[in-house]
Image (cartoon, rainbow, N blue to C red; front, side, top):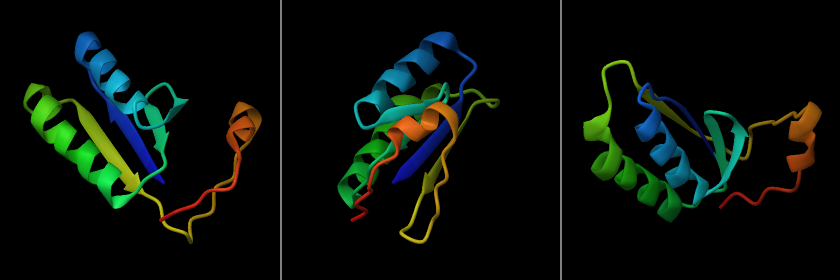
Length: 90
């Protein structure tokens, strides 16, 4: 699984980036997405960021991608518990 967190100051760019990520996974928080990954998905996302978004980021914008492993423990509370299911990590 990938966790993608972003902080983008430009409203239009932030909306476009959010729509881009929604093709691959679901929103955990307003600026955090959970994406079930494969090597191909990681490649597609990073290439898309580099070619379509990176040149438009300001010095204050940031994107962080966390690649979660099988050893990672995920505990969910509140609404996030609704998204609990078995994960298959390839």
